[in-house]
Image (cartoon, rainbow, N blue to C red; front, side):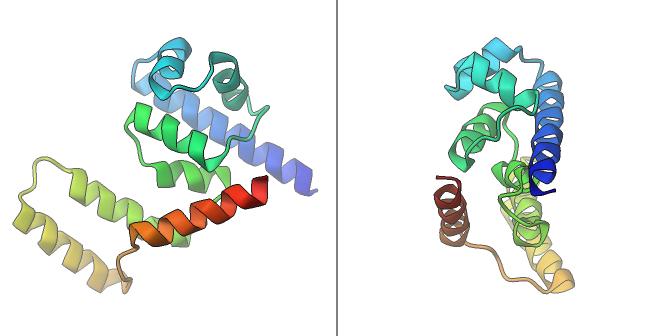
Length: 136
């Protein structure tokens, strides 16, 4: 049963990555070059054959200009609760249309509504490191 869940998670991750790559209008070869992940390995990830490490997901996310945390959730490395606040905060921080004052106000409002503290980069790094050690 656990193996089936891993395959299901890998397949969902692969479908999501393929869709993100297509939205970015990148070929598999282009993504491989930009992310510095081999073309065959990326193909295996997209087909759900391989489950990548957090480090590989981070490289892919950077190349696609998407949140690494969203990939960690889809890969089963992070729970939604651990990364949800971080993804919203990142989206606010990355929105070029907002001034710094607006970003700060939105973050304060968001945190007051959901009752969460900001997730630090150190905490996120610790979770990813633990996930990588479990995979090894």
